[in-house]
Length: 274
Picture 1: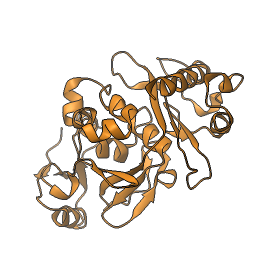
Picture 2: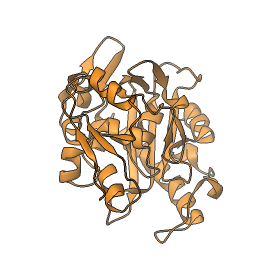
Picture 3: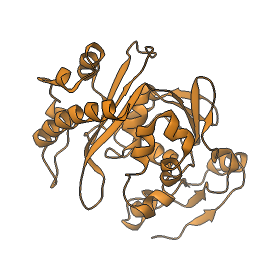
Picture 4: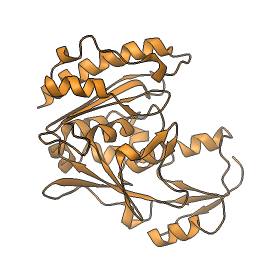
């Protein structure tokens, strides 16, 4: 790594001041992606701003009548064992408990994952599937407007993701086919069913991770499952190979075929959980 300044602010106001003083600053929200990129020479920021000591970002799982609110600095491990999340959407807690390995789950955070928007990460597809609202230091962004492509989000350079607000799904499940060494998803499918339509007018949301564009929704799958929430409803549906990437782990056509298979299995899992 190149030399850098390390800061550990104790308030959100101090974080924002550091982001706005002209230095090339990167936020550290667990570091499971950032530090690896720095070691590989892909990033060389002047300053690292560690968010671990910012109380405004910690927040546990808070339940209101209609929503569950999560703090952005909640670790995967803490979410996996959180009783409120387990009661609200057991499939989300299950997802958190199967990210990477125990060491990564103990350090990595949901906010860090969503801000990084890795195309093979689990949380982006899950939040897209549940129609989450992302709360920053200055606004609320609906998840359909948040992801902008590969490693790209709607966050401004001096904007901080503070938390998330989730509706309660009737059913939710996430299933991924892992790349064995990294445990990132070759493909992963998240499926939610709600009792009431969301802002886009649907009661079922289906999101795919592992694409060349990051997490995306699958409208044809949503429409089919809105009519009949069963694996059979997806028979004959396919994922466009143009959405997928090719690498040493599998080409685009293989991943597209795998995505359709995983989607049917995710529906079965959602039905089994509830």
